[in-house]
Length: 264
Ligand SMILES: Cc1cc2nc3c(=O)[nH]c(=O)nc-3n(C[C@H](O)[C@H](O)[C@H](O)COP(=O)(O)OP(=O)(O)OC[C@H]3O[C@@H](n4cnc5c(N)ncnc54)[C@H](O)[C@@H]3O)c2cc1C
Ligand code: FES
Image (cartoon, rainbow, N blue to C red; front, side, top):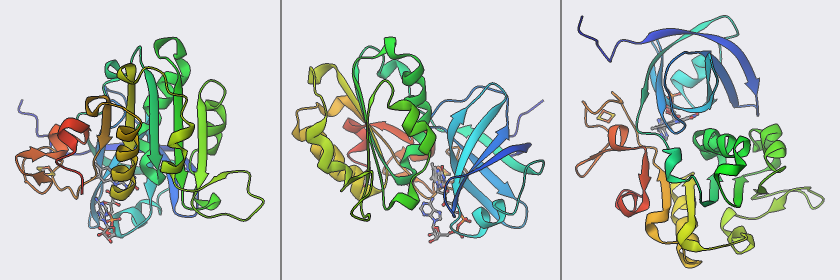
């Protein structure tokens, strides 16, 4: 029988975890191969489709952390545990854990950029013997915007976690300032054996990569994940195309040697 990749499947909502007023994680029933950094097209009939990154992977589920911004995402927020959503995917290349094994690791995440890398961080949190020193710099606008609070606390048990906010009251327990301000605090070893992942809004990615290059990381040791407006998600419609690159198919994860030509 011919398989039609456009046809979605129904997936039940197992749990809803609220992070902020407009960001919830929907734990969805799912069995199958999937990698951190890949994404699903989430759809609701009559409302449309939205690409959403996988923010967590379990034996019988995936997590989708969704910000309510418009038509489809607002309708998703009307769904509760036991309801179903339609999903297509997983799409995209995702992160290859083998690129990072045995290396010192630096992860820089801006806002919801923490979602697509959460699976990578979690893997190396549970397998510290497979990597060297690890630093996570995670930035949010204000303390109210912080996602995955309990994960951030847990991860700090065996890696350096620098949690920073752009704005806060004077007595805040968090670091204050942009993620790039904390690059000098990274405990740097041999740069040729250090890999970095940068995910977030375009300006944050641009300045973070500049900062990492500035402390000596080679371009080929840096990976980024790109978010572009997408439609089909599987290399057919051309919506996401930059030059001859299909972000949905060749990405969204790119080594910076290629990704630098795609950064806004
Ligand atoms: C590969 C990929 C992974 C993504 N992962 C996540 C995720 O994990 N969680 C999450 O909340 N969102 C994610 N997004 C963004 C998400 O797809 C959009 O927010 C969603 O499509 C908006 O749909 P809507 O119908 O609710 O909003 P619309 O009614 O379509 O639009 C509302 C507003 O959002 C803007 N918008 C729409 N689509 C995008 C987009 N792709 N990028 C930036 N702005 C957009 C519109 O211009 C408009 O200003 C991802 C996007 C891509 C391409
Ligand atoms: S979204 Fe259609 S080709 Fe990439």
